[in-house]
View 1 (cartoon, helix red, strand yellow):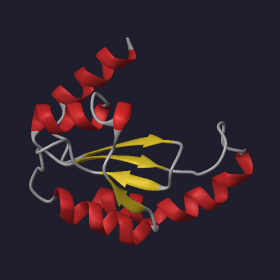
View 2: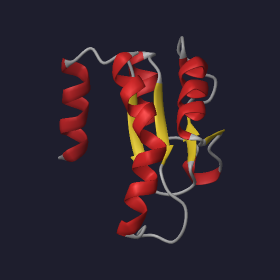
View 3: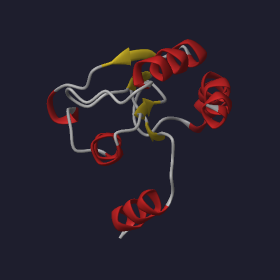
Length: 113
């Protein structure tokens, strides 16, 4: 049901880009195979600079099939998976302040771009 609602939401709106949040790695996944929509790398580098998270390429089981990959393939627009934390899951609630501090500028910029 959640997936169907997310697909419907994306199809009914003209989003410029999409961001999915996951909890491990403090890194940013920004492309899908050979698919690199216009401005993807530019946005990824800006997000990296603003958050301090490194750009990465997914490997193994993480290399395809998620929301970011579907969005890129379906709409040919930039999409990102942001791995927001580092440590043992679930991340401790006390980490929220550091995570928010890392992401605040990136999130504000993503609204404006």
